[in-house]
Length: 461
Ligand code: ADP
Ligand code: MG
Image (tube, rainbow, N blue to C red; front, side):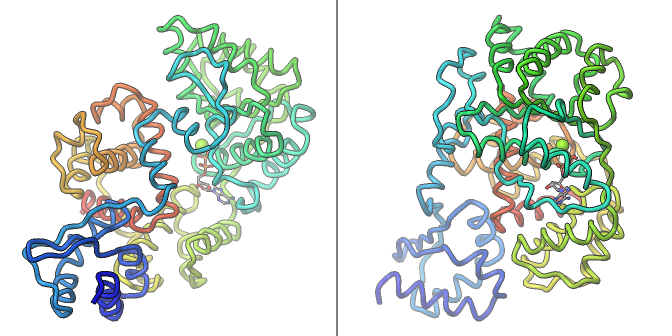
């Protein structure tokens, strides 16, 4: 029998003994690359699948192979990139975000950026296409903000300038302001639409100061067509940055360029914010965002579940929306955890499982250290701790390293420079890029979601 046909036969049998979800997630893209008495080599799409097959399905695979006449001393799993897209993202793995987006966005980078390598930008800096207004569920608590964003998206630089959204953590500020940026960038590809978190903004400014490149930094931001700055509360106490931002703000505002800002509190409550900046921030439209009401939270859960191809029972939806009341990110996190837990075990998400998972979360200890998280991640991927924090750039080290960065950001809320340091990286943009990459890929890749979920389960076990 041919190698292909042989493997199809093996898969056919495995399909009968595992759940449909598991089969799709773990076995679908696999292939038989080589077989001899010494070894059988199975091709898989990524390290998460490799990992999971080794850990969970080793026995089944060995047995089924044997049944089909394939016996050998060892089974190896080899990661093969399925298509060119993957190869491209592999190439960009440890590049700073600007360079990486040049590779993937197929758009010409800003060729006259003179800030030097790690401060050069493409025209749609910082935007993540997954955020759209269409995906945003509108309801009590966010409808005003939504309407203002629609208005700005249709007529930038006119009525609401700046648009200032404020409110608690995880209620959709970043989602909305990113969505506006995406609309404006799509409408006019030559427009310079810049999104930046204040954390990164400050870091770039500090770098520019250090490298004596503040004029280039200023030029870059003062020539934006749309400038979106997220979480401006972090500018508090940074005097030089406030000064710089004040001038940027004025230059853009005078030229009728749209400015969009977000913060966790209104300008009047941001401590040590210079008065002149405070008055600039409030000079347009400020909107207080609230956590959406129960019905809206239910609609969000259902819509996100559908995005994962799952239809949830109402009781499960309502249970989640009742128990997680003040943060949509957490709500989404709980949903993802529930779906990953069920996918992994081939179960339907029921109220009982949801209740069990949420209760476990409530009793989680909060004393994890960065080192524990990195160690756990390294162990999960069966690589030495020295490698994950070391200089190696092989793919099976780089990806776990990116996952570790993602975990540090999500579990400990560490800053990007700190995350970079914990993993032995000098450049914080690597951390930003890695966290974003894993965040993005986890939405599409069930195997990655499960790897994350398993690491987390062990951390809190
Ligand atoms: P914030 O910036 O306010 O802290 P985010 O914009 O990052 O919050 O939102 C957290 C998560 O919740 C994101 O994944 C976002 O897509 C999601 N989210 C928040 N509000 C909504 C909504 N109304 N509809 C759909 N998704 C939402
Ligand atoms: Mg945000």
